[in-house]
Length: 302
Image (cartoon, helix red, strand yellow):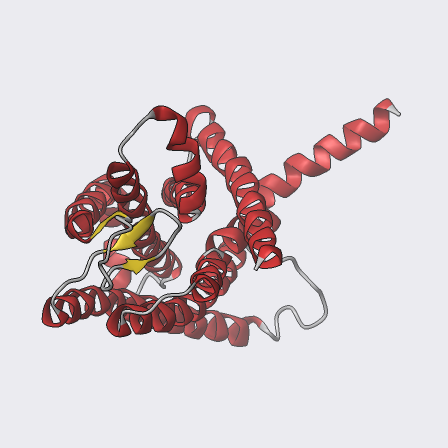
């Protein structure tokens, strides 16, 4: 169990550092350069992942708050609420990223091409509605989460050393799970649909130009690289989401959690926010150019 916790801390630390680097890079681009709408979306996603990784380790949060003399019930409600909101925002912003890229690379003759200018114009409104919806929808979690009372309440489901889920009616539990799952399935379905659409566009583009470039090996266009990156991220997200969903929904419906299951779930849940910045850093030509310039200047100094 201790080795598994060590892996969790290493994973969270790596994810936070990578996301912080990427977040600062996007802030620099937004403030000092002409940023693209994709930069605004990616900046939001990195910020969400930083908070998700930090609050995902609820033990960290509760331990940090120990010295603040805050009621344990408030600490647990705050940590779980923020973690749940960030998880919901992660799927929403990833879906938005996928949709936006599908519209961006769509041919000028396609139906989606009509939305290119509209998406750029209303992206801020999209952020506002996504944040408002998730902050309000996940507020029900405040009622069902609290500090572990350590009394003869056998129906409490302890999820950390000091926090637990309070017993609720099975019908209410199933209803909340159904509504949440329906929203998630819809968003995952949109991501898969846009992913298939992007794959078809890339396949068609490659087939049309295979004879023109048969004797040369040109670099991939930034749009193609961005599309391939998003397809990879969506694939990671969908796989990790369903593994996490199976574990969490089974635990909630059966009202049964143990430390090993909780640690495995955290490990799975943290894979996407940890992998995402690493993939984006390695595929962003702007970051690669900056690193190459730094390396060349370093060699010149030596």
